[in-house]
Length: 410
Image (cartoon, rainbow, N blue to C red; front, side):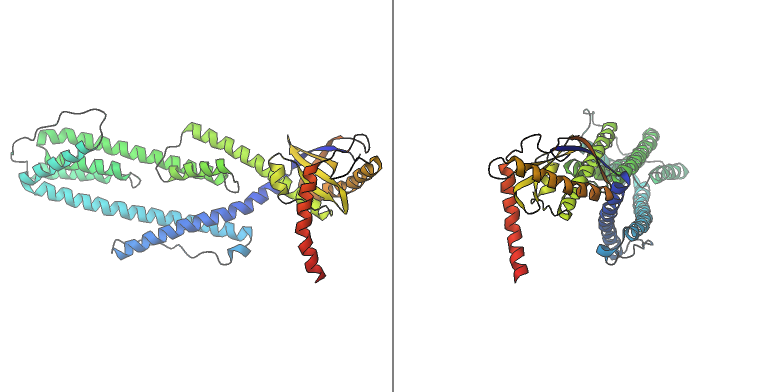
């Protein structure tokens, strides 16, 4: 049972999960440190501008993170997530309150500024409205002649209603939407009383729509964070693109479509399969080395790409072992590196490899990779082929080993 072999492989899910857990903990740590530093800089900028101070306790980075256990890093990550969420909410609430106060002062000044000031404010608001792209051109309104604006209890009530509507904006409302609401609020106070009432209704509707958009973005951001957590510990070009999309959704710069969620699910499944194959390749390389069968440089990369890679067969120069991953199987066979066919020597090489491959199989099994033999050819049943690529690969291996031998001799 020592000729060409084909073995299906199965990786213990617990082993892969633990490997991903270690990588994910460190990936999350790096991301959280970046968020922490950005928020700390924002908090420092607020302090320099003498803005309302908030209670932000972000703590420090993890000491000796390279030597920390996975459990230690996960504990720090969980604590930092909680601190960041509370700090971000505190700062967002403070910024929302500051902007609301500023708008209220501007609206109050407008309400008390007389007819001329109101007309100027209305004209400025209309210019801002016209500067924004619109679905279709609207006929510009004519500025009515200056007439006395209602004053007293009715105007005070209107101001209260306007400021109350603006105050109902959620902290998560975007700057562009917020500016539209504020511009419309100014128009309400700048208009005559009859027109003001209809604009007030429009203002209230605009606030509701802006809040609904903010809630939708918050829900999408929460879903994006969940999807992003599922990508921790995975790598690849498609994974990187998925992360960039999810980061944009969390920042409120992109929408999360159903098609995006489905596509990210497929990307994750493919990346998990690639991670399993990568683990098999790296563990095979380690097991061959442990069995005194050094592998060529880039062994794991070659087999992951579906190409043939080679290991030496102990002290045997005329033969090597060819390894390939294909269709969730490990394909191995002995090949000649030079010379003409020699049935006796070829069969002896196959038997020697059989002994060593048993050791390799037991080694990878102890690391969570189960190889199940699905096809084999007895020794001597088929000619051992010549593989010039094997000779080239092992020549590079010999050249790399020669300086090490010299260092040992010295």
